[in-house]
Amino acid sequence: MRLSPAMMRDRLAFALASRLAEVDVLGQAIAAMRSGAPRSFEVECRAPWGRRYPAVPGAGFHVILQGSAWLIPRSGEPRALGLGDVVLLPHGTPHGMADRPDAPLREMDPAPGEPLVSYRATLGPDGPGPDAPPTAMLCGSYPLDRSRPHPLVADLPEVVHVPARLGRHQALRGAVDLLAAELQAVRPGSAVAVAALLDLILVQILRAWFAEQPDEGWGAALADPAVSAALRLIHARPERPWTVAGLAAEVGLSRAAFARRFRELVGWAPLNYLTWWRMMIAARLLRDSRAPLGSVARSVGYTSEFAFANAFKREHGIAPGRYRTQHRIEHPPAPMAR
Image (cartoon, rainbow, N blue to C red; front, side):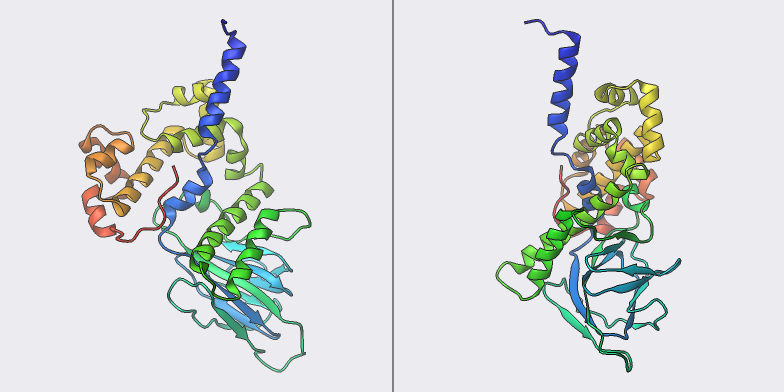
């Protein structure tokens, strides 16, 4: 049977959607920045209390499990947090948490240095005060390489606040409940479960945030069918010799319309983003694997080691061989999803 042009377009669209269904741009962006194992712990506080949290080399988060609290950011007005609220500090900025917005802040006692499976701290009143109900918080941090942040993370505000709303973000609530249960006591498999749940919570926080910002920044880029499809193509096949015209044809737009929409939503021209992503993948391969430079070059679309080395040095300011020597990870985190 001869296919009509419309049927051919439908089949091509279905094939494209099927091929890209398993490509997760958000997950890959996080994986590309990961530099270690996440940490988490529970804190129970009784008023009056206030603690100062130092900067962390990555992202920090708090979840209000019981009671209420105030987040005192580095700049801007304090934010009231209620039961079930989640806040992410994607740039790891210092901040305070307290029972009231004008509370004096004491230094937070450092938690153990190793990745945490089960750790609980109790903050007694910082002075005489009423016998108020306690506030329980789930706190933690994600080590991220901030030297080359993915724009999806770099463009986030200093504080990402996901308020609890009935019927909204149920997957995030479920992951938080599971993590809180795991932290109650160490059980067989707790280390694996906690690490997986922390990763899931980070993804769910960002999903919830972008869902709340569908018309802004990367929320709009991920929601736009053509731009999100082009991003998934770049992430799925970075080694292909992509052109703007080729990407535009794959997503069903003219070259000019695609280039304009991609730049408006992503902030970069398509091929600039492609080169940057290739160099992110190359840097991770150099850190995490023993693959020869030629193999690394081919995996990101370069048939010439010389051309690859020049491109890598333009992006990272250092030759790939020297980068590998300086940044080698002997026990790398989970590999980037492809």
